[in-house]
Amino acid sequence: MNDREKKLLTFLVIAVLAGVLLTGTKSYLTYLDNLRSDLNAANQDRTTYENQELAANVYEGLIDEYELMSLGSDHNHALASYKAWLINLLENDLQLQDVRITNEPTRAVDGQYHRHTFGINCETNLSSLTEFLYQFETKKVLHRIKDLAVSPTGYDRLQIRVAIEAISLPGAEPKVDIASIEHDPTLVNASKQEYWDRISNRNFFGPENKEPTFTPPPIATTVGESETRTLTANPGANEQNVQSLVYAIDGESLPPNFVASLSGNRLTVSSNEVGRYEFDVKVTDNGLPAKTVTKKIAVTVNEKPEPRPPTPMPEPPKPPVFDVAQLAFFTSTVELNGRIEVWIHRRNQGDILKLPIGAEIEIGEIKGKIHNVNQRYLTILTADKQLLEIKAGKALSTAVNITAQAEDLLLP
Image (cartoon, rainbow, N blue to C red; front, side, top):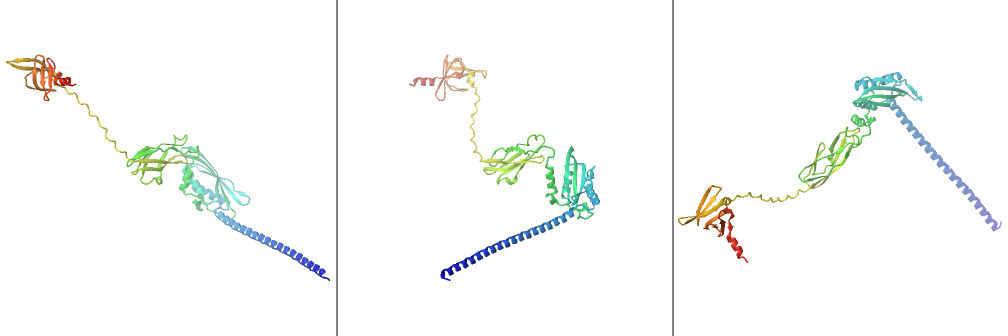
């Protein structure tokens, strides 16, 4: 065998070995993939089994719990016990009159449980109806209200018809005393008062209650002084004649250094510091359910204004002064024994004043000395050297200041 043949043989052997190795690798990888698939399937089967086992345990636990809440498996006793509980609740606890309770024959359902059906017909009020519903819903019994019809029969009087279904499970005790089964408020997630609030705040027979409308007024006041406003709100449409409103301040919204109070709908505010204050006022109607609207009220507190200066008051006009010189008349000049006298008739006194030249005279506004006299004129010299001239027969008040007239003539 020559060298060429040897090389060909070597190449052929290598090719065969490579093909065998490649085929074996593919088979091995396929084998690993199959193992992984089998492992995943096994894990899924185990998870499914565990979930089913857990569900079975939960189901068994629920069945055990339900069996404790079930009516007894003795159907006659179950009917009698449940009906006795209803009668005691309605007639003894709630003091209702003319209560009628009926029941239908017990029926098997899908071979799994038995259903007992009861009917109640009576007259009551909203308070007693709410108490009944609370006692019913919190009773740890497999029962439910299938139908509830409520009709008003008068003021605060309701006619009710209730259809009830209760269940007996085959695994329950034969005879169960329904009255001894406890109540659990968590079944309605509420206390008795909260349950009452839920039901009483419903309007069963009328349109939906609308919330009040309220637009707060802007308020301005002065530091240290209180300001009062009357708040006005309106109930919803068509409710003005049947609803009343209650106003309340949200105390948590009151800012510091600010005081606000309400008396009915009269709001009074004050503060000892300048600023703008905001707080909330709630307005609640008495509809079913009651509706509340909350609005923010803004109050501006300003500085006290500077006091205005007093307005000068004009002096009242002086009352007119009557010059008695108007009633004193220069009547005549008389000469007796070389002595000249001036006669002045004083009408207000009813006498004649007789004065010589040089005599002092003071009648009303006329004051001075008799300076000169003749049949036509009387001249009086005042203390400030002014000459007053009165014509004969005229009142002294008609005196003319001839000194002033002369001065006026001398002016350029």
